[in-house]
Image 1 (spheres, rainbow, N blue to C red):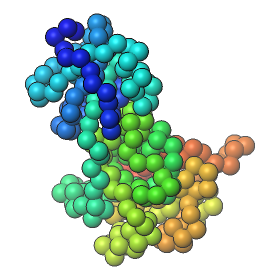
Image 2 (cartoon, rainbow, N blue to C red):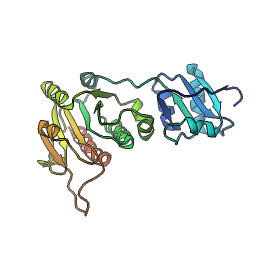
Image 3 (cartoon, one colour):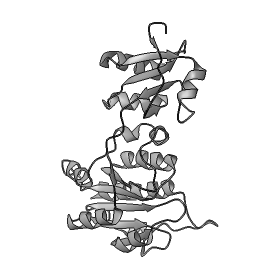
Image 4 (cartoon, helix red, strand yellow):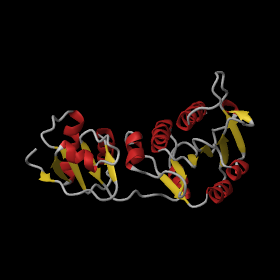
Length: 256
């Protein structure tokens, strides 16, 4: 890899891991430069990364494996890191407008205090697969689009639009005014999730890993849906719960 330049110190946001970097390139995201392990055996994904970077005029810098891991935020770089500008967040109404150009009514996912980047990434990955039109997250006491979240999403956060808002309850009220049904997800629900109607414009609200839905957000929801539990545990991981309900929404919409 002597044809590549030597690396400079990384400052700011990164995308890490072969799949995540590849999806960033495919999505046309602005990338300042790439760091790649020197003398690496280029598999198919790394070959495509190098090819796309060359086509887009993105500088590829060779580093030792030790140096790459020292600059990695996730410590799971798989031999490649993309240095990118800070993530761009969208207005919630922009997510709705984008949804209206398709053949399905808006389906948004609101995360009430998710703090684990792996949960955010996993939910984004399922949201993309299930056809959701975007995520809404709070600015405070919650994880944003970090290198760990992007890697956990397997690149889905390059395709799913994310809105970061100052107040979830005001956002809920605004979305209601625009005709969206707000369905919270909680173990103590009004109905089972299969009985909720996801065929219209819907915001699915998922609570935090430890506390679930906050009191005011719960009170602001139009309906609370639960997932029945037959085993000994009382709840599921937030990303697993979101995945189950998103695919129920997907099933209902496909049937309609």
